[in-house]
Amino acid sequence: MKSFVIRWGVTTAALFVASQIVPEGIFAETPGALVWAGLWLAILNAVVRPVLLFLSLPLVVLSFGLMIPLINALLLRWVGGGGITGFHVAGFGPAFVGALVVSFVSWAFHRLSAPPRSRFQVRVQSFQGMPSASEPQPGEMKRVEGRVIEHDHP
Image (tube, rainbow, N blue to C red; front, top):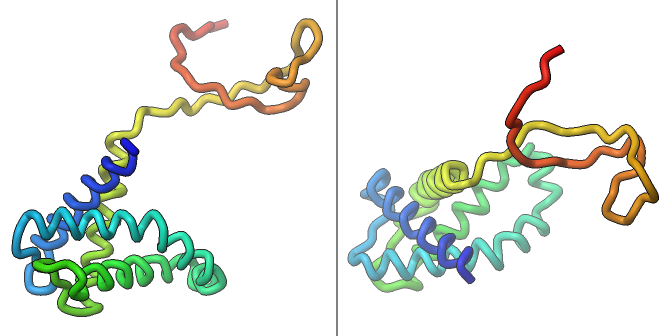
């Protein structure tokens, strides 16, 4: 539930940025309308978008992913099509630009708020004792996350 509330907040903030970048195409009369539009778009992105992506998978693959912004624009147009009083999207063009802005703002937020990930992988050559289900077999790769505290120099 906490992650959905965060997604809702990020989506609402991204819609605000989109309404500032595309002021003649995306318009929110009140902050409340913007919050409700953010909620509706977050729900559509969580429920409907995966279904649309699956159904359009051949087109997504053939277009090298260029179909995904069109799906995002369709969802934004759907939200701004009159279902929420006080939030309007003028047409498909503003919806497309707005969807690009919302995608970029959401990506930037999640990229900046994600914890740093380690870039080291350790290859396990051998181990002592009997292997358990959680221990890797010799030659298998196991992802290890953490920080290198001290380097051994020869």
